[in-house]
Length: 292
Ligand SMILES: [Zn+2]
Image (cartoon, rainbow, N blue to C red; front, side, top):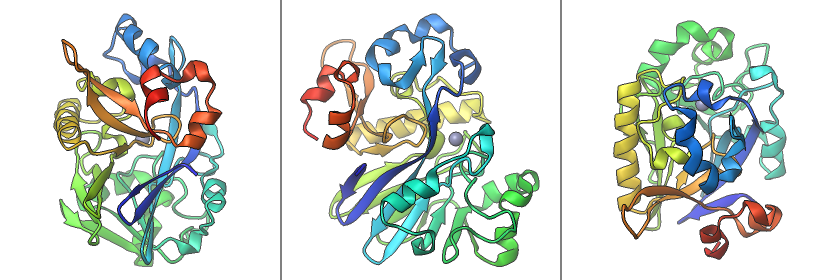
């Protein structure tokens, strides 16, 4: 089980697709290749080779007492030329599509909404309210065509206006830049917290290099600003993060090295099961020694 618990909330990582999708100079066009060198050493599991990212399109399943939430719905049956396996991965957790009460869409890019509606326009999660930020909907809906516009016609769409509480445990927090209405989801329960970050953080190297924007960050300046703010908060409050584009489960913490110059890093959180399944050469010493 690829899960962490936050008080009474269980967060499970689901993967739609994972693989070598992008060359580094395509996905991070502003970053010279030689600047990646330290990160090849530190995060070998996040690269396919020294020119290519190992990427993932993931979702998170949140199980609260009496409520089941899916955050993002992947590339879908044909996005990026691949057939996503999100629904199979969901089923392996014992959850059926009709068990989902809320589908929370961090933003409306094609790799986050693929399994939202069937080809006939009916919602795949038949009992769910679909939730996203109003500004995101207004800016994106004209371009999305049949992918999600049917949700509004069906009356199953709820639009947020900035920061909003969805329940005692869940708060939608705007994290704009990657897209105008990009929104992360803060989980709070039993005195613990975690953040499902969406695309505000897509690669572990960004913990150290918050100004490294990806090609798909629509407003680069805003995106870097949001990322810096977010990283500072996550580090200060030691809040675990769920990042759907980071390989494996995408669970991590923002930590700072104790010796000078005291850079900030991503520390991967994997379950015991995952650690056993990862070839030992891919585990960093700090992670192998860490409690699971
Ligand atoms: Zn994305």
